[in-house]
Amino acid sequence: MTATSADPVEWVSCRQCRSLVYDKRLSRSLRVCPDCGYHGRVDARRRVEQLLDPGTVRVLDLPVHSADPLEFTDSKPYPRRLAGARAKTGLDEAVVCASGSIEGHPLIVAVMDFDFMGGSLGGAVGELITLAGEIALERRVPLLIVTASGGARMQEGAVALMQMAKTSAMLGRLDEAGILTITLVTDPTFGGVAASFATLSDVIIAEPGARLGFAGRRVIEQTIKQTLPPDFQTAEFLLANGLIDMIRARQELRPTLARLLAIGSPGRVTRLDEPAAEVPVPAEPAATERAGADRPDPWQVVQRARDLNRPTTADYVGLLLDDFEELRGDRLGADCPAIIGGLGRLAGLPVVVLGHQKGHTAVELGARNFGMPTPAGYRKSARLMRLAAKLGLPIISLIDTPGAYPGREAEQHGQAIAIAENIRLMAGLPVPVVSVVTGEGGSGGALALGVGNHVLICANAVYSVISPEGCAAILWNDPAAAPRAAEALRMTSAELLELGIVDRVVPEPAGGTQADHVTAGQHLRTALLESLRALLPLDQTQLIAQRRARFRAFGSGS
Image (cartoon, rainbow, N blue to C red; front, side):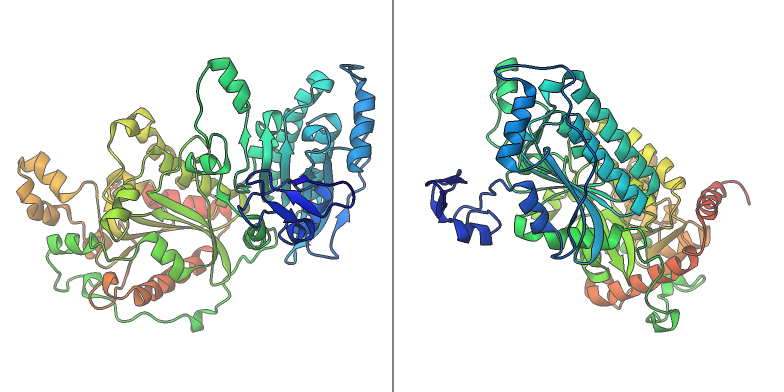
């Protein structure tokens, strides 16, 4: 926003739509243009006030000195530039550090101010960011970093460059200690800040239109003579390419941060709110769960498992969880829509939930790649599982896929490696893992989310090394032999229970989960709570040993 008159300012012009906005109205809208939604720049002090609960803000008085290690002079000596920035902003340096709370959840914040020499990262800024992280570590509270920077400070040369390593190492220490870290990306965030602490947090949120990147647009276009798309490096571009978790308008930041802090803060709930006696008891198990009972035709079960009206992972998230926040992207350049996941709470217990996502319509199926993940999907799920391990949160994985995507690009990007990495990762996770086959469990694409302490299956779901059609085509050279293959593969819930592949069959309502989503959700919730009650008392060593022993036994003859 640009002022149109001298002091006192009454009207300002929006930088994007150029409309005139009354300054007091703009302040009430948190410096967001009421006409076009453009998020204007906010100074560090005002940002702290916007985010933290009133009465809780304590600016941290940290002993930091801005040095002139190079005795640098361009059009004026560096000390004079610093003095001018201090006079302009009223700040000692380009970051304000404070303690406080958001909706009662304590945290440390480090907020950058672009008006102070472009928010550049020098020795003092790096020291302040690092000290803020060390205080978060000492107090065992989350760290929130709000970024706004043009990059490393040229006037400090290699000393500024070293701040990238210093701040990154600090975030590594917070990772080791299990402390939640969040970055709020504001416009702009470039260079050494983008390539260090800004992009290393557990969760990266961006304001609409905020730009983030290593090299700026003008530098790229002049260097490689390439025309870039209009949305290049914007929050929307970053989200589509799997580099950030979410975009939130300024008015939504506090409630979003509060939900994340409630789930990820140390001292969070580590037990279930509901006593066992109050958990709804499921109905009599379906016939498919009882060994020796009359069983349906396996091929018919396959058709039920594929029914497009069965609840998807997104449906179950809505049925089971409170305060769910979806996290997106593999942080390597893609976000696969065939896997979704994030942070939520089940009966008061913070959890990470992830799963395959199909859809109920042709449009949804196409958008979700028919629930067949690319390598980016498995790398996204691996990122979420590592976050669960860091924060000590149980993992619930929901499996419903015909298999991993078999396309050329998937192979180019290491589909087999991504699946293998997930399987190895899950085997050694130090937190409870409950996996549930809710529909189709197809081959390694399913197992990549299926290495759990407890593996459950819905009564009309299936799980196998290959689809019946694929088996029939390979072994009988006749796709029409799929019903015969379905019977031979022993892929129904009752057969898998007998084989020990699954630990429990989750009952389905009459007509299957597709007939009654609410009752299906209640049955699954009951089963999940029962598993978690059994697993939560186990320590990390026991959880890993139990999971590895479970899978070690298959094929051993024991």
